[in-house]
Image (cartoon, rainbow, N blue to C red; front, side, top):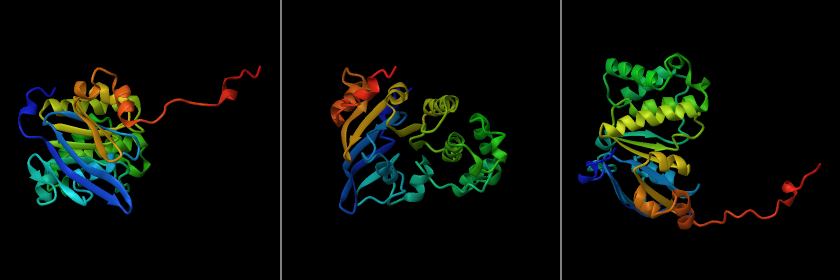
Length: 260
C-alpha cells in the first residue's frame, strides 16, 4: 500500500513541538516524520498528548515552540497553502449542526475555495460512498454519533487533500460504518494520499496501519514501520512495555463468588 512512497520527503514533518497549558507540559518536544503514502497510527493512552499534537500539526493550535511542515509547506508561516493540502477530522469538533448533511459538506468545500457546482457534486459522491445519501437531507443535529463521524469525514475529504488527519475516527462508529470508512481511506492511500490517525484501539491500528508512533507523557516512545515498532511482540504488549501501568486487577473477590 505504501510501497515506494517513502522515498520522497515526508508528508508531515514535525520538529521540536512543545505545548504547555499552565503548569502542565502536554507535548514535550515531539519529532515525527510521517512518510508519504503511509497509513500512520498515533497511539497513546488518554492524556498522552495525541490530540494536542495533531491540533498543532494541522494549524488548529499554535505551539509554544517547534515547526510543522505538510508536504514541505510550513503550517505556521504559510497556513493557507498548508491547510489546502490537509483534511481534518478533529475529535469533538463543534459542527454547524443546523445545516443538513449535504449543506454541511458543501459548506466545507466552499470554505476551501471550491466552486459551488464542484462542491455539490463531490459532496453528493462522498455522502453516497458513506451511505448517507438519504441522511444528506436531514439536519446534522439529528444524526447519530456514527453518522456525525461519517459526515465530518466527508467534510475533511471534499477538497481533495493529500494528507488527512483523523482524531479517533472510529470512536462511536458501528461495525458497518467502520468498514466503510476503512475502505474509503484504504483507496485514498492507494491513490497516493497519506492518512494520519490517532487511536487507542490496538487491534484496529495493527490491522490497518503501515507505520506507527507510540506517544506517552507528551513524548514519542517509539516510531517507525509497524514491524519495527512491534519488535517481535504484539502491538499491545509493546505498547504496555513502553507506556507502563499495571494491568493486574486486585480484589473484587465478591464478583467471583457464586451466590446460588
